[in-house]
Image (tube, rainbow, N blue to C red):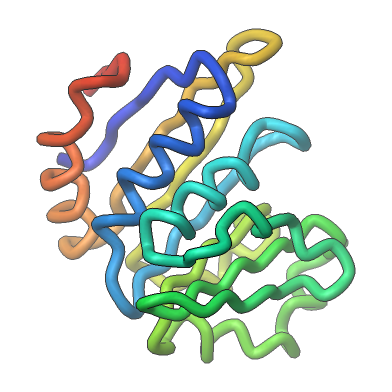
Amino acid sequence: MNKVVFLSPKPSDTIRLGKMIGRLLNRGDVVALIGELGAGKTQLIKGLAQGAGVSKSTYVSSPSFTLINEYKGEIPFYHIDLYRLGEEKEAEGLGLEDYFQGEGITAVEWADRIPSLLPEELLNIHIYYTGKKTRSIEMVAKGEKYKDLMTKFGVRSQEFGVKY
């Protein structure tokens, strides 16, 4: 399975979807999130963090001024928010490859701002507005590891409106 599209009728469903994905993530996994401002990327990351074992995921927020927040959990969880970057070259000195190849799970908001810096294999998630509170969440696996993750996830996804 390469691609799955979910319909999220409310923000709490986006968080719940993130939890389901987060439970399947392992050390070294990278999730790249793309979507307009306010689309729900941070809500999904809250769920990812909680699913990955971050106990205080309610405190997960966009890093805004620091760009990178690190959260302790069963597996370290790194939340990178590139909203403030104007150009990809501004991210070159952040040491992103250390996060991408590290011992934690890395979630990158505004990942479309650093296309050439992202690892070749990752889980790409694009969130689209479909209404005032509703969203369409498209997951695309890049690489065998993430195709396997998507297959495992498909078994658990019956509670959402899924399009394959």
